[in-house]
Image 1 (cartoon, helix red, strand yellow):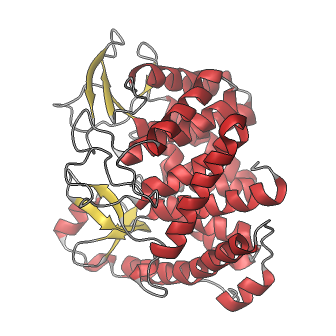
Image 2 (tube, rainbow, N blue to C red; image 1 turned 60 degrees about the horizontal axis):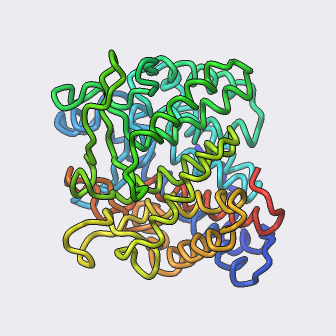
Length: 417
């Protein structure tokens, strides 16, 4: 399926120039992308094997993973086997996005070919109005592909996906509905993760000029700012709304230790999401929220010295609690962008992001050639749900590569976009 002229790691390290003001930084970025070139080829091989064996899956496995053909790797089962998901899964777009980042870093057309192959598998999602995760699925795959290739077919997919996402908007409450499941628990739940999907809408507004996209995205961000955060600027995970009155009915932290605890990946989504919203709108309140969330994270007494957080900042058995590397990679990537807008604390944001990346590179990488081709270990999907605890996760890897590229761009050009 894939052409055989992928650069081997030693050649990649010699041929790919990584402009950096620090020789040590340049070396570990090179090392991590060389490592990624090995791992992602392993991941493709194992994913294709899983797809080929799909017909032999048990009925229970088919029911667990949902409907549709398998497309992308997500994580690892308790028995050590690879989890590969259909396009409907919220994580399906991250692996194609990783391949696009490899193409961006190397310029190697073989990575473009691989990225196009895996991206094409996500296209059915453009009309899937049953999910808010359109940004995660389509923008991370087709969005990166369009940014790097300007393929007009990708633009069409992105615009249709953005229109589909707006069908979930509830104007009275001023939010995009997140989940459709668990109707006995919530009426109209909105999760902090949904901030990440707004980038697709902002892109669609700039690309099409249709103000619908901008209005929906800004209203959602402003309503979330009003209702999702506590006085200490930590975020709840789930806010439930009455769509007739717009009133808040419940405040939950579904994937955290307790409703009033601070789930670490939720704080990362908030920091990244409001930084992005400030970029797209120039609204000072969004920048201030990103700054406050960053301050919450990096002044928290339970943040470990290496800045890789536990899965919840209030988990009861710290330091004997699982880490969440995915929260760290999202935070690091967001911090590099935040450093562009928050002049007063720019150096501190970069220092924190640099520390996270260096520690991930030194202590959290998977085994080269192993671990099903994942890049990083020790992420946590859901402790309350008892799945993907202390496991590799595709989205941790995606934001790791994004953060490395952002660091490289900042140090070589002073810009990210």
